[in-house]
Image (cartoon, rainbow over all chains, first blue to last red; front, side, top):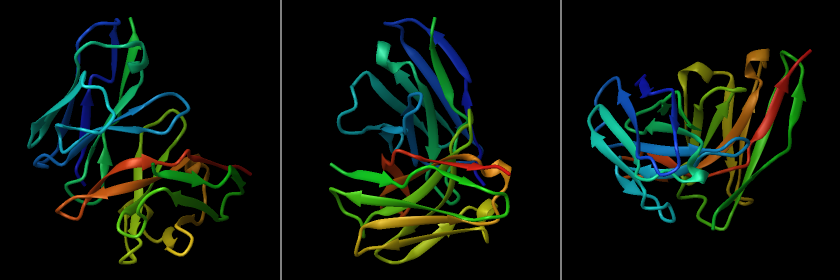
Length: 107
Length: 122
């Protein structure tokens, strides 16, 4: 199975900050990577697919990058509604696997 | 707009089975994929398996092989996940999610159900 490792596990930031979350795959997954946002008590929501493609309706302050084994999710200017947990997911092969999550907290 | 509506919460005894449903509306069903992802309390996301209703093909994570069955009824746009031989560690929120297929045939999840809490307790 492909292992996905996110860092950091927790990130403390303020409104307006630029934040970056990293996701590493245990083997190359090309650009078959998605990012999700999950708020407490809610289902995850798709933000980014194919490493850098922004899902329709997602604000442009979210961006994704990387390929192969290292990927990033960047929020250019953190907004109050962005405090949540973020997960990466590889869909290069079965079984699909997720990172352990990065919780973005208010500083 | 696609909506996935799941069945209600369940409380089960260890050793029993649970079957959770997920009804889709507002979008394509047969050509998409439906997967089941679970989340234990305070934990991350874990893919269990999925089905492509049009082809009737299923794929399961090795961890659940033999204990889970995913089916779909394309006449009612409903997918089902049955998990057998339940144990306390299966207590979790179970989500269905629609898979948007790529050129490789694999997929990511663009719509999610609201989740179904399954509690396994004696």
